[in-house]
Length: 393
Image (tube, rainbow, N blue to C red; front, side, top):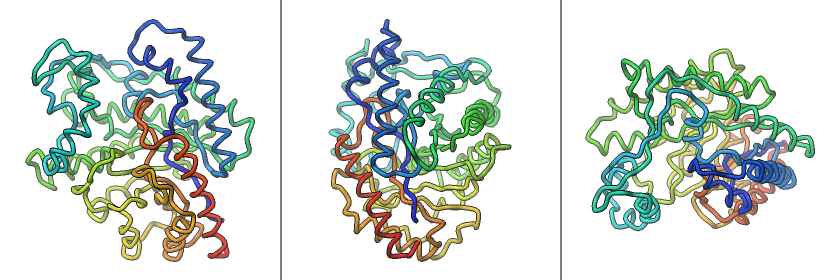
């Protein structure tokens, strides 16, 4: 039977969102009301994943304000500041933005307005929150322990094969600027040391660990857009892959999932790197499961790469077979087709059905409506059943 899972971040319910802004912006909040809403949200999202028939589920990242910056709330040595920046520098550079400026002016308008509404300056500059490393980075696991306890309580009420918790990769600590460590290598490995503690705690608690590394791919475009070379990008990436493996040291490989994508935003993605150009980096990571985009029109054709690239025997491919990039709900027959063609190359036991990326990258960033999110999961599960029947799995 071909199993099913997803990449982690799910749409938060309105009852929880009503309380998140005060927590996220460090304003006085009703902590008890927030915790009660969070407990209910995790219980509901766990139940609904199980009812949908997904085999390996998570807590939807209900307790995180953002898939990257949650970490800044869980380590020492980090200082947030409001700094004056040019509006054009609010988001990472990319050749995509250079090639489609009219589209991105509309696409980014809401985010720019949100920042500008909190600004004390005008014109082409705004004050935006940025994070700075000003001292030794150490991990504080109190919030993670609460996440684990909350997730465990919800899991007691369902029957699923396994459960995972998503976390950030060293490469994705993207907006954190170093003011403490002597050089980039020291800084990146200090982040990795802190992340090792988070990673180990999750696996020690009995969960699968999922490492999210979307920035690894997107930085390819950013480096080239800034005048760098592919060699410059690979130097940047190889350091961070080395740091990730350092962070994973001592953690059983069979409990590790590694998720890469090309960025979750709904844009052209015309300058995403070909998967063939970066797959060697992906496969260097000592993980059992590799979750990779493959359900959207920019990357679906890359399934053929596995006819040429040998997936190591100890790995399982988890291709996206439904995508967050469109509100169109994939037909189960299409899902089955996507799974069957890979299973015939790799073997049914080495393929799982997954999603391209999360359906909500932060509390207030939803890639699809929640009703569509659940419809896509239903299509994923039904498609995996069809594929299993056809493969005799």
